[in-house]
Image 1 (cartoon, rainbow, N blue to C red):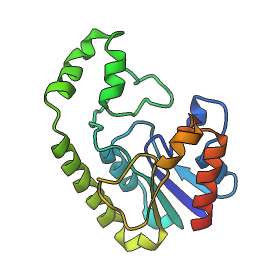
Image 2 (cartoon, one colour; image 1 turned 180 degrees about the vertical axis):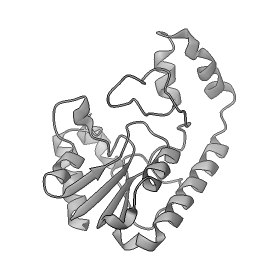
Image 3 (tube, rainbow, N blue to C red; image 1 turned 60 degrees about the vertical axis):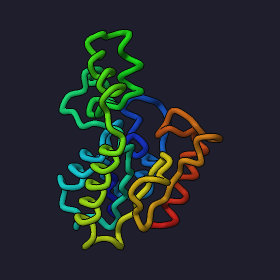
Length: 193
């Protein structure tokens, strides 16, 4: 089976930076996997990942969706040299954490704290999700939508699997989960392929 994985850090290959195996690595041991996921990317970049390949070449397509509060950026001011996060976009918690080391980030923190509009961000996220659905509609029987964040008040995909419940008991350093958590994700996804 030929599988395409697109998405954010929940689906990225963390072995470029850390030792261990996440659920995408476990999947790649049993199937032919093309993994385009990027740690920290926005929904816009997820759409671009999907548009970058011929989707008809894949038997299954797994799309890991992200937070609506990520802002697209071409080159990240902090992580551009990091092997895992080099393609990530902006999110408040990350920029706020790094502003003490780099005061040039203060205007970004000010933007998030004083001007960022959550309603607009959710609206744009919904438009991007709808664009993804339109792109994938001809192949909808091949597509699995997943997330590791609370997705309750965001765009609802018809076949979305939310793994956010694993954070309390299985948080770790590979795809945000420990080995047991990654095995749970892998087993669930494999059962749906």
